[in-house]
Length: 51
Image 1 (tube, helix red, strand yellow):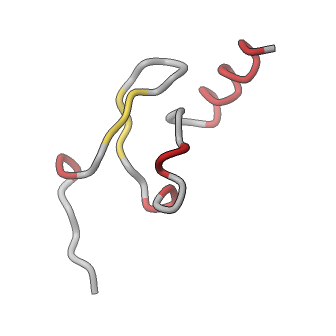
Image 2 (tube, rainbow, N blue to C red):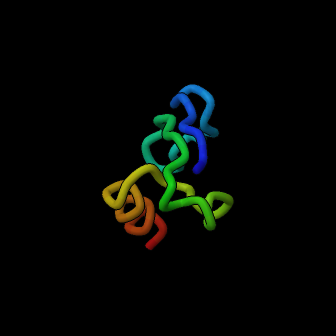
Image 3 (cartoon, rainbow, N blue to C red):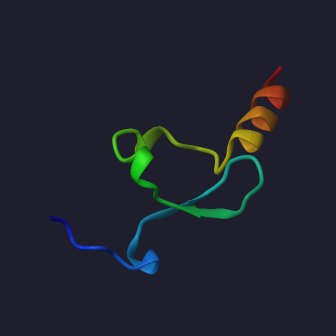
């Protein structure tokens, strides 16, 4: 079984929509390189700005 990591040890990025930092989540493990926003709300905002 894998060991738990402290949140400070996880990779993080800045959100492209709001500019806030967000950390890696297990559900993003296969797609971490393509994740650009921290939430669905920010993704919708970014999508509406591009239109």
